[in-house]
Amino acid sequence: MSVVAISCQSSNCPNGNPASRLECPTCNKLGIKGSFFCGQDCFKANCNHAKKTHKIIHDIATKKPPLDERKLNEDGTFNPFGTFKFTGTLRPVYPLSPRREVPQHILDNAPDYVNDGVPTWENRRAGQPAKILTNEEQQTMRSVCKLAREVLDIAAAAIRPGITTDEIDAIVHSATIERGAYPSPLNYRNFPKSVCTSVNEVICHGIPDQRKLQEGDIINIDVSCYKNGFHADLNETYPVGCVDDDSQRLMRTARKCLDEAIKLCKPGALFRDIGKTIEPIARQNGCSVVRTYGGHGINDLFHTVPTFVPHYAKNKAAGTMRPGMTFTIEPMINLGHWDLEHWPDDWTAVTIDGKRSAQFEETLLITDTGVEILTKGAPREDLGLE
Image (cartoon, rainbow, N blue to C red; front, side):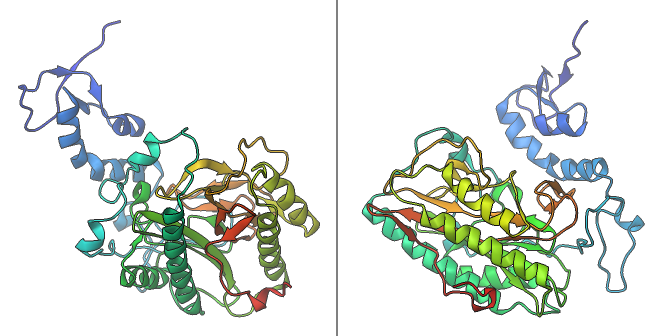
């Protein structure tokens, strides 16, 4: 069988558009035929123009109806995934607001993915040994983690029935910029917002939109900031007004799972033992532990070695905690089954049965004698924990 070579698709190919076989992998995945280029220079210069095409085809592939076929609400908002079979009652409310601006002086010192969405250094350092921070680097981590905690507390203070998750995103973005930091999620692997807001059955990575919080909801706010070359990451789940007993039990359990896991952290402790601590607590309270997502190393890279810190028992995570390591523990606890699905936005992870999920996260530093919670905040009286 012969292979047909298509001419280079670059509109300004310096080589005269010769027969070419370098195919755009994204186009191929989405079923766009004919995206061939004669070399890396033509590919890099010209397949950026296809990003909009990629999105259009992706929308078709995930069965998003064209805008003129969407059922608009009276206020002009709409559900972009009209034919998608949702697992619970939550629905996205679009359109998303435009990407929020970041001042140039912050962009000049932003992470490497700020323009193209690709965390190049994360990819290059994959599989390398965990970074051990110097005393100076540890102090920088303390500073950015303190900053991130301030931002989360500001966002949490705004939670009330009627506020949209997009308005919470605006608060987080503004508070981060005011502190001279970059909101780490913004354009990380093309994530469109500055914070993750996960409501009710959303486990993690919820995209802020136009939905208004309602009395009885629960919401997780996941804040990450980057400043002076280092990232911080933390999150908490909050009630919106008065919540039912199951939601209260869920949040209380998720917090206890995290707190007890932190207690075992010290030099020489095994990462695989974290899940051994968390899962029994969840089970005792009638909950389950998400397995797909876990904690991660964090320092000058947003996600790094240890690349996956499981929260469930009988895992096979490798690695031992050593002084100078920084990483997160962030158990995601469900009222129902531990499994999940993703919405067609490729980010929003939801419980497979539509039941609620809660999460708490801290960034930790292993010291010579134990562990330091770099993102530690004030105790939550509403959780009723000692």
